[in-house]
Length: 423
Image (cartoon, rainbow, N blue to C red):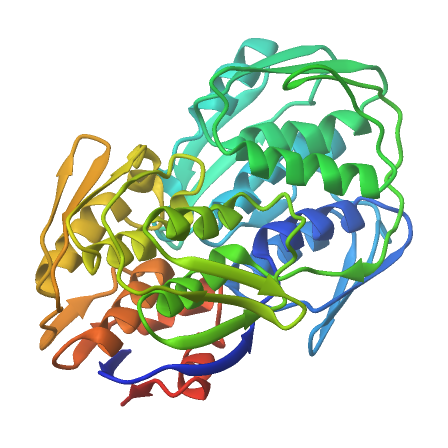
């Protein structure tokens, strides 16, 4: 589906949608209990549906009603080698591989879009030497399928820290379910440490005991049971980044529902905007960002890849040169976000280039627009283009806006509520 976005002024107060990262973790913890959990402030999306399907495949019940999610943990015994459709959600896939190994001796993990191309060798290299059978194939409908057969064993696990934190989180979820104690060590440098802390926080909230014996080294007692804990999900800095960057670029937008005390790594968007010269005010009404002209800067984004595209757009309209470093992991997302970000900025009338894992942006005073741009089946690219269009001289037609369903299905409604114009 194509939509055309027009130059327009965004204005108003908008509550950030629920944190997708927190929701994944709270849903999984709830599904591993024997009780009932109610999560309020929930926002459904394709990624959330993927995690819900996997929870159901492991024997739990999931009911969605408006912004409330009810999870009835472990109501029936999961069958051996369950089929778990992970959609296009990398978090879902990497979280559930060790969980399924611990509970059912493995599973068949279905993958769509580019998910089958995203790296899984960290788990393969960890588990295959321990006797696990690992097969990557294709299902009858052409979708990629990973079949894993083998029980997760107690023991000492070591993971490299320069890979996705999702592998670390997957083991943190699964190891407490085993009969005996285990240890998990993550070797420095550690990527996306905030996401690991978020997982630890969710585990502790659910009554799981893990002892950090040294930085990113844990002793994890076995034989533990997850406890049901209801609550309200907090706002998502990852999704809110487009609103916060819009404000830094001159739109009068206030973002509500964001907790100042959070383990969300994407809260770094505020720090990066301040580095570019924006002023950030936080109070009980929300977060207001404004700037009297932005200046180019060096931004290290290795711990917050999801907000990098919209930060690059913000840099494009700052004065002088900006360098966004640590962008290597952008290549392994729903699209090659490093290449796509550079291409789209240039297509819009900007000036950007890639230098290895760095995006270099030369600021321009105005984006031209007046183009038809591919959204790359990537929600982050669609958000970048919609915001860019509001600041451009001419409209921007975006191909594939349905990609927004992956993380923020109501984004277009929110965009129009703030005064954004589209057709």
